[in-house]
Length: 122
Image (cartoon, rainbow, N blue to C red; front, side, top):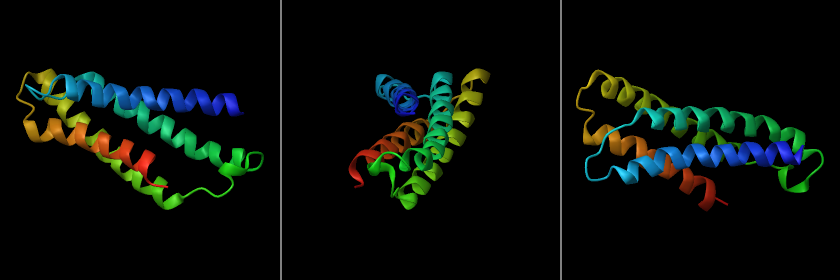
């Protein structure tokens, strides 16, 4: 089960890299690329999977025995916001409309906030 957990964590990090990497790469001309939406959905699905694996792993690995559900709940809300904003940006991008700096920075900034919550909240 630990191997499955590690693979899902790997995919979760890849999703974050897709969102934040594209955001940083397009900082001079901010936009929301369709791959950022794909990264947001990967993050959301793997995050939910990780939340489901915690009770299973908690039975065998002590560090998973007492999860911080407040932290996980906040991360879920932020991930949902990133997903909605990325969806809106993807639609505008595909129609050839101006995405807007606020939307682009909202997607990248909130994704970066989620990474900070994951790593800094102990």
